[in-house]
Length: 436
Image (cartoon, rainbow, N blue to C red; front, side, top):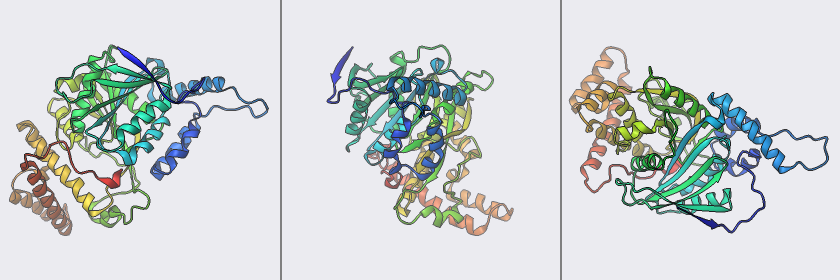
């Protein structure tokens, strides 16, 4: 069932999103990280159709749009390795009170190369929002097409608070949908969206079902989705790899005019790096701001783990179940990091809280964390002993160890206090405002 709702805007012809991508850069500049602007401009310019300057007649919009689509399709194949009309994926964007960053993110989303011939569904999913996020999403949909469809969603047993109706618009084969729930938590939202896609028969194709996820306060480079999709499809299709999870990559920036940059102050001690590509030294350093999942596998394991760091938890679930994880090192998104002491502490307490929750997922998870991140295992004295042993063996400096164990123990104690508070939802946390 679907209903057609006419918006206030009217036009005889609406250009596809791939047309004149350079016109969309202006609204983004004031909000996006400088690194995004620097790295994305060449990718945007590469998709601008050439204009015959010798012809004084104004270029035909339709002809330019057709040419832009051909360029977009060629670039998609170059970056992903697959023809656009044979590519199929879903992108879920969870949104929780992101009013400060959401408009800039949505403008940057328009600059991402998604040819109209790609079979794609982009789900903008608000959960427990009390700010203007919902209004911003609706305005974005009406800005794409004059007609907004209202669709009835399949019933989701795990989310009785889900609004049964979704709004959607289509641009070629690319569908933008808006869903909303009062149930808090990114993990719950991802699980619900995945179930909607599976029940709604979006993933009817044979082979792996690629579900990509982006945070709504991150800025994807224009080629990021094509690169991530290509890596994910190859990784999921390879029977020898048995893969189910692919992490994107990110660059960390400081929001302009946010005052003192805490990463520069604490960087020499904590090993932070700013404006530098964040590499993954091991497969358990998750990039939760951009990644891809096998949708069938998500359903198989009962959904995304409902913990404070659901991205890292997915790595543990994959490892415990003998499935492979891959890094898509050229699929970049740009994010702002916590930029004051209070929010730096809050982010690390959240991580510690999630680490404790992962340990409680079962004995296999606790043992794996003991090997991968022993800083969150054992008693206080056992943790001090391990660090002291590292100093005696010359692997770590005494000053660095004292500083780190003092901070980490503080994080652990605060995280345990939060977990002991039964009124505190395991998936929610105070917003890190300087990342928005």
